[in-house]
Image 1: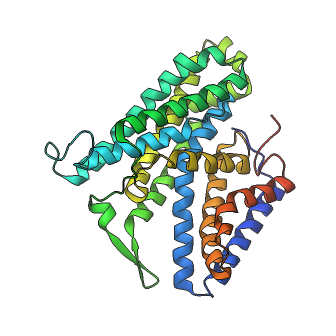
Image 2 (image 1 turned 120 degrees about the horizontal axis):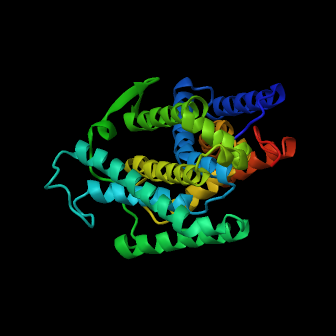
Length: 335
């Protein structure tokens, strides 16, 4: 979770940001109203990516484990939140909890707790015997993601679920440059920013954060001080999985719940952590924002030039450009 914040890196980030903003202005024909919507949409997409990528980055930064099941945790969170909220779900909570706002909060809490519980099981029971075998870790987490996908198919089948139940935050709207914009997007952006700041403060200014960072640099020394490094590993892995499930529950009112969303967000999340620098939490946050803005801008630009595929390949294009200039990613260090 270390990063090298040099002027060259920040110059590259600034240059990319300026290019994205200029392309956004061009794509919207210098229309400030459309440009503002594009930027807000980009921040929204960036925060959704961060909700998956942050846990992936934390786990890799401490444990050198690339958790291929991270997208599945995101998907599980979305399905649980959807099920609790809607009367057509496997378990109907609408009679016991008629207030949709309370059901939405319950869905978030349940999804986060289930994600944490599954994370504890995966780390302590399945991954712990394989710490010395990195290739087996990748195969195992990939296999776990398939098992979770099949479990979702068995419980909820393969039908995509569109979120139809309304609640206060989802139904609210506000005016931006003369256009109506759903408040829920702003809510997701705020959640993402709070998470970025909260985890950064946790890592930098709390005792557990100091132990985590020390464990990254020298786990043997931390163990010699009488600290249970294994417990720290479990805590970080659990936190990473819980954040992913939390992200799925937050994304569900906008995206719904589909069996493909886990793989889609996992690929983008991997692109984000490579872009920001493997193991760099700060790089993951910045990479998420850059990729989100790039996706939104390129979606608008692809309509202008009538080349729809541009939006699809944007993550890989951005990744190629950055890795050609900085092979370690924006804030990565040699590992």
